[in-house]
Length: 319
Image 1 (cartoon, rainbow, N blue to C red):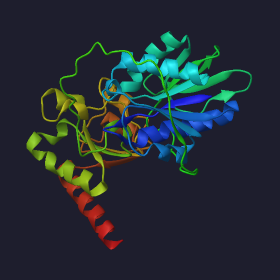
Image 2 (image 1 turned 120 degrees about the vertical axis):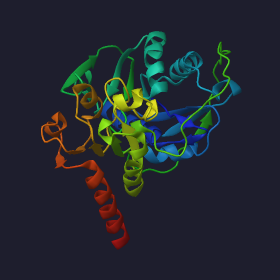
Image 3 (image 1 turned 30 degrees about the vertical axis):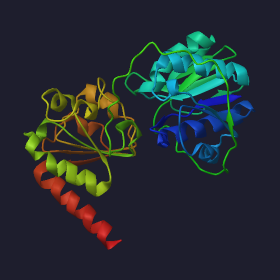
């Protein structure tokens, strides 16, 4: 069995959970087995996971599971996998998934690969692929053991809803007491998280001053996009650090990435070069970012960005 840990926030499933379940169902087809999802803590709409390929959803509820604790979740997931006879565990390549991957592999005595971005092959051996060297190459990993744990990179697959609702079944496992005391959980609300965003508008020091950021927010609002920034902008406090994309920030894989006033240093490109389409706006025709761009506009961003925003608004109004 392929078992997928379906993450949720405040009881609601996000796109990442559907991606993981869909990837798990496709992996199960490759392996000739079934795919089930497992949900920890209080959540709603569990049966909906069946639409993305889960044949059954296992639900484990307890007060200790309503806040994420990697040690507790690891023990619960490993015991559940053994109880269900699973041989493959899939998690998202999120902050939670990253903290679970190594623990699960060690506790479950399994091989592990982080950040996979394609379906596995199973022609006599189980192999998966991931990007390496800051996205410049693709590596193929063979997992030789009978058990494996994979973390799925965000936006690596497009989830397809084709099935019906799945039966939901309670599962009883030992739930250890957490050694952590959680004082508060603070999350950014109201925007699509960068790892899940399909459209991203980003800017850098070419904005000259944080008071000018309104034109970037206007463009993002017109597109329905999430805003991001380069590291220097976050370091000087112009924008919050959770918006920093790059090698030392958040790695993203949107369908569209618009970069305004960013030169395109290698550290920044490492976090965004998996974007399907990159549009660069910069007044310097020699900016390195143009070499990585699918489309480039040489011009003053303070003129180009507002005109682009108005064009998008006009297009939407006409439709």
